[in-house]
Length: 224
Image 1 (spheres, rainbow, N blue to C red):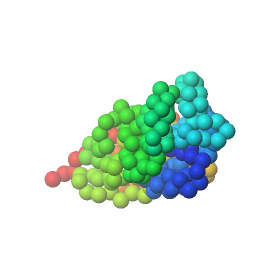
Image 2: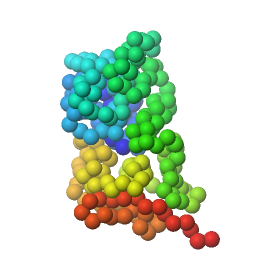
Image 3: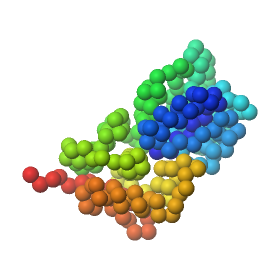
Image 4: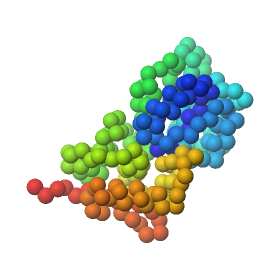
């Protein structure tokens, strides 16, 4: 999953970036509203963490312009502790959720997971595809109840596919959503990670749809 983090305070921005990266998100940064507006309009993000008190262009103006342009990406706004009017204005401008500063990082990550799931019409934090299960809260993947050890990139790829059950996902879409803007997206990077995942999952779990992309299919139950 690819996240746009918009925060002008350097220390908090680094803390948020580190926590999001550790949680297996690809993170793009903006420290002012003008850059955030441009990135949101030109890059495909799965969600945005948006501070409202930004230089150059405030967060509410950024959010309003995104919504006026028809952008539906989930947005979690950050507000001052007692600024209830900012919360109301943010929701009215099109925010999907809000969090007051200071906050616990675990709560921000939980709210972000929920926003991303809801954007795909999924309510449960537990994703299933046959006997394959992924817990978005713990980043734990199991097959027939047994732990599957994945790298951060492998987990990110599998989670993206599992959030889109039955859908064909193109290589271009995967490249755009799994890596930040500054990542060196080699033409065969996705194929490499698809190959690694396939070696850890049952045969045919990840189906190649010729000329279109990849689709996750239900892993068969192990023989007793």
